[in-house]
Structures are given as structure tokens and as C-alpha cells.
Image 1 (cartoon, rainbow, N blue to C red):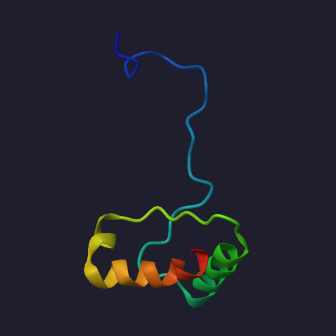
Image 2 (cartoon, rainbow, N blue to C red):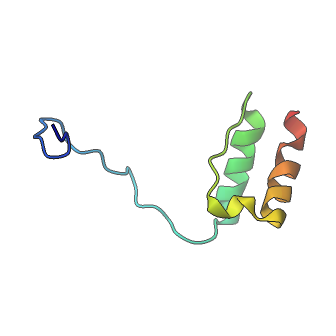
Length: 67
């Protein structure tokens, strides 16, 4: 049975607000820094480019405070 072809009674989930593409604003970066610093065990979901050496080093530097 293909569950994708079946009917569902629930409403489809949609984003609360449309994503903003491109570089983050300084305000959003500051907000992210605050939330990361206040978290007990921060987790980041990183994209494919996170494996680039310069990006990986930046992420290591970011999380150096949590080891």
C-alpha cells in the first residue's frame, strides 16, 4: 500500500512564515548567538557546504565553548 496515494483527514502543515533566503541579517545572527549561548546542549543542522574546510573550522570555533 502506498501511503502517499491515500487520503488524509488532517490539514497539511505549512511554514508559519516564508523563509528569508540569502545571508542572515545582523539582528538574526545576534538572536541565534543569544539562543545558542543560553542553551544547555546546542545542536545545529548544517547543510552540505558545512564540510568545506573553512566552514568546518568556523563551526569548530563556535562550539569550542561547549566542550
